[in-house]
Amino acid sequence: MVTILGAPRENLAAAPDMLGKLNLSTYPRATKPPEFNGSTIDGRTVSLASLGGKVVLINFWATWCQECRPEMPMFEQMHREFAAKGLSVVGINAREGTVAIRAYAKELRLTFPLVLDPKGEINAAYGVIGLPATFLIGRDGRAVARAVGPREWSSAPAKRIIQALLAEPALLRDGK
Image (cartoon, rainbow, N blue to C red):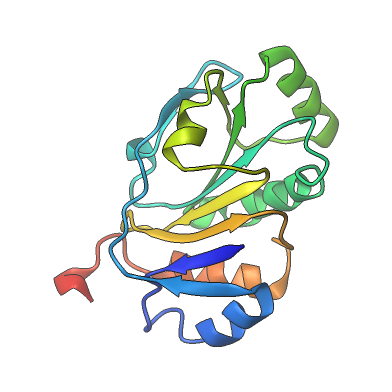
């Protein structure tokens, strides 16, 4: 299941086409995602607040998750292609150790931040009930999309959604 939350009409004008191709549906505007704060496998701290003004793609995953594995190179590709334009890709791993996560990241050559969630608190805050689960957050901090289950994140519709979100201003004026 994938859902789009409050996609602005101006910049996601092709939303019906993109939504249909990715099986997405819309939600009310102004939905705010839960704040999170966690440490990466290399000891850095990442929080949603620290990513303000960026488009944020959060992926909840695990090394044992067979459906997660094909998505990880797609997220790495998005990270490499769009990070300089304002996209921040963050992987959040629930309840696995640093050694296993590092080995997985090395094997798949992942360079985007991988956040540890040893107690599953971030997963719980986002209501994650299955893996993989992916969330998109706009530059203005609103929740934009949610996917439970794997998606083709390297597809043209997915890239158009990212590009449309990157084209938006960090703060929308007058709620428009």
